[in-house]
Length: 416
Image (cartoon, rainbow, N blue to C red; front, side, top):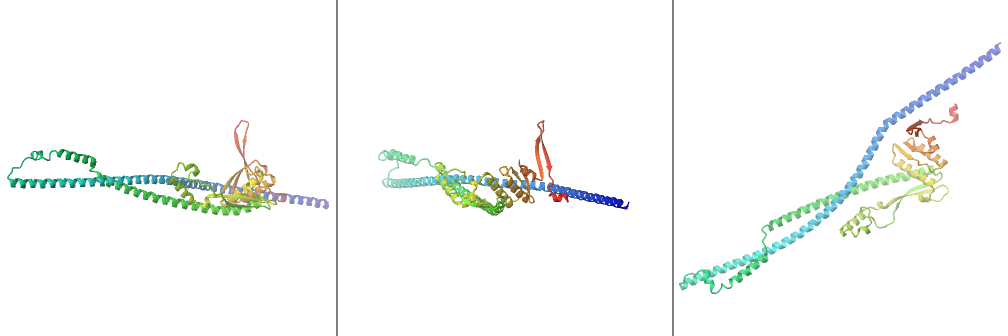
């Protein structure tokens, strides 16, 4: 009987061992599940903590960008308004200067006329005084009594007196009315001209300051663009190698062909030449000369797929264009990282092998940022950590469905 008992004991021991292994495996799985749940809770808590900061940073960045745009637009508007005001004040200054010259000329002529009349009046008074003294001397010498002037002039000079009076009246009429306030008006005109000069100097100083601010802003924009472009160009080659195995790609700056440069506002100079004055056209040309050569730069994308010649973006197929666009986007993402990105059906034109390359690239970036992908591709959905869908029930009411997908482990690891 010991043989069957030993066999039974061995079976019982084997069963106990199997039960212990199952219990240990269940414990490990429970522990792993608890660890995974704790990890997911930590991730969720981290997301909850980071989300306000991300939203706040996004709002701050958007506000800063809008503020910069508004400031640049305001500065452009102020510059145009100051230029127009300067031109208007310059025209008023020229008109005032011409008025001043006319006033000075008329004042000088009237002063000369007044001086001549005063000299003539003094000469007449001197002549009358000398004649009166001579008459008095002759009257005393001859012993005659002085007679009234009407009687004395009645014989010889009375006939000439009306003509002389008429000539003097005509001369006085030719002089015109004398303005006693001409000197004060001249002083006011000079003060107004000086005030206009000061305003013009202030406007010119403000314009110089605005131009300096615009140059500084353009310089900062140019430096930021060059830095970002250099980083994006370096990243583009690396991303292309992942999406186009064995292929190459590069970004390069190209310059537009020389042609008539549009003036401020986007209009063609040929169409505005008839409406603008020569001075405005010269100002537009000066602004065009001040604009740097970087204003005519563009970005050209070149792709060399494996076993093919180098092609421009316009010569690629639809799938190749999608991969190239993705390579460019991820190159910019690397140069200017953000907390999360939204991709809307970017892989719609890709076949299964290219979708796999896209998903591999997406996984390599998932540790740096979160990706929200709008898609209808089954492979993309299978690679997601969490799915959100919209379903409409029979009553026509939509509802959002979410599913968190557990990572799939290899078969060997699952059986261990």
